[in-house]
Image 1 (cartoon, rainbow, N blue to C red):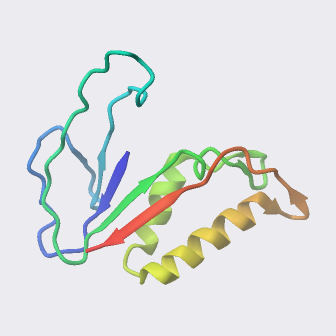
Image 2: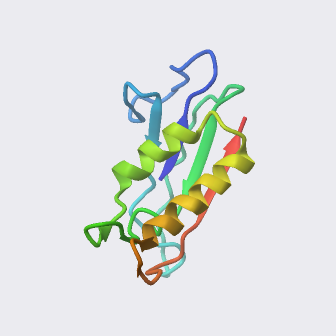
Length: 129
């Protein structure tokens, strides 16, 4: 998915009603549930149009962060926690956001002396407009 955390003056920058927006200003644009280039004949992917404004942050990411095991209960980080984390750090510089994301996943994977192996790629791409 693509997450947009609105930081601009117009938090209602949506141009398509199927985009989800919650009260915290985070919008989620879900991708098609279709693999890339596996089948001989592929369906077309859905194009989404949306407006962005100065201060908005766009995040593209793999599921590796939210699916990583760790913490006190040996559980996954979970997408809800990942969304909250992105919302909480979106007002910071991208350099600071990278640092916080790295420290968060590191402390999650190394909790109270217990080290958890990385289970998947962890990719997060953030763009601040």
